[in-house]
Length: 217
Image (cartoon, rainbow, N blue to C red; front, side):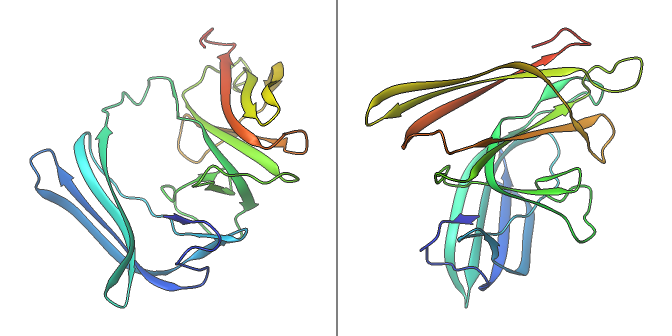
């Protein structure tokens, strides 16, 4: 749950985090509720949790409450695919401006932790000039060289609409390093782009990942 600056749920507020998950037949298969504190992400506030679900089709309600009153909630359909653990794959792209090293122990399934880095996805996808835009992708079972490391190259294309017309930023294909994650066969790709050169506007970012060992895009 992400609350932009100026929202009704400030950083530091004590809340109850809850989740209700229903299966395709409308039966409740999981309920989670715990006490927590809204965390800071710059001037914004957030709370994140994870739940374990088997393959299937679900409808989930996530939210926060305080004093018996629901402050925010969202109901969303979800499909969990059955994956072969040995198969290769790439996660959806997500963007962040708040990234920092973990100073406490974390569990394997804690959300948005990549090789000891805590990443807070920018829930409203709004970024301010002068900072950095971080992008993250998780790779499952990429090919590895004889030295046991992946050989991955990345290209970025950004298309924008500004008050002065369309604009493009293109970053050529180049080699990149991946962070090995705690789960076997999982790697994190995370890099930052300075926002100084961006004009105010709406942008679409595309990341092209090339696995040089497997020869896959």
